[in-house]
Image (cartoon, helix red, strand yellow):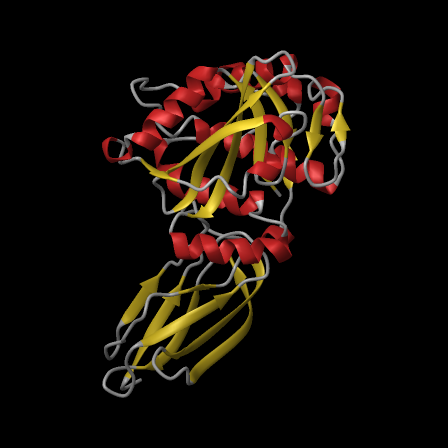
Length: 325
């Protein structure tokens, strides 16, 4: 057909694998004025979708908007077809958290080589509270770990596993190959974005050093502590002495380490870490997140899962302690 070309779309997930979606809509329109050239409904992936469109000079600067059911909306690159050209594009789509759930590996089946540090910390922790609904787990091991069934606790468990993985990916200065999780002595609280735990003074000192000498640590940026005071549990919150916070220098899924020093009843210093993963690093985007979180409850662990897989799948197999189904 003269003056036409073909756009061929294959939908991929964040790991670059074929995405599975049984009801995807694709709209092709001009990028400049939004005028629709084609709208196709009910496409099934995996596979590919092809559409014949006007080529240059009849049309130029087009874009395809892909609207899956189980993934978030995504776009093709802006394109212009030449006559008789077949242009292949493979946009990557992030999962829609409302359409997926975590299927956790049982406690006894978590590989020791990967999860021994986490299991050791949980085994020596006392009662662990869920931030969002104040549910308290007397222990968070064995059958108690496996039987988590309330929605806030499921999200908090997912977030804890995300954080455990991410803390092993962000370099600890002067300790190559170490994980930031090595500093955690006990976990006190878990939530859909964070966990709060007891740590030694060495972690507080290291984070403070990075904060004070930030120009020497390009992998980190300084962060604000004001939104984190509320996460510190009593009796420590009423006896806070100082706080300091840094973030890893990632575009998405950045690790924030917020340290708190409090005073115990006997006068001894106590150190805590509020560890969380944020959606965005940029200040303006983070401010937007603050308002978004008011209505959504905060960063969704499945979004964080997608950021982690997107960033690290090239390093080799990833075991987060759960799969999405």
